[in-house]
Image (tube, rainbow, N blue to C red; front, side):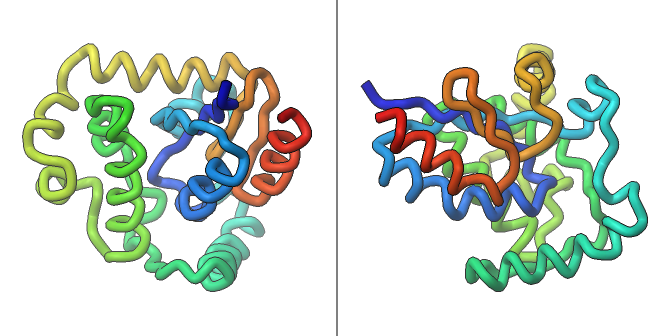
Length: 190
């Protein structure tokens, strides 16, 4: 039986974008399946009393340089959105409206649009081009809104405090910089 990686993510996070560029190859090397779990990181912060890293002036000052260095290191085209953090609410609801097997591909498209292609993914028109107008319309349904709230609350209940967060069973790994530990855990557990 394949190990399952629960991957909690929000497209507002550039560090999560970096993780998405590494995760498929890691899963293949380890024979694992990835379940993409859309969450709203701002909602998570409210639930657990956390604050965004950018609220700390010293960290905010270094953050942009850190992102540039990491994106360059991994060979990822990078553009800093004019407004950051941006509202990812509609995008994350749209992802919750998709069948599970489509989330990874469509999330990847949104990450690329936001972080590499200078597109404003807060706009319904942009998301309609990426996902289809029917998905954007579904994002306003109460059941879809509740799914995003549920995923976010689930991450909080499991001990998550930010994104990207990965779980294998009850083992939690936080941050794109801990993917090597996730891979090591999967290989040792095989």
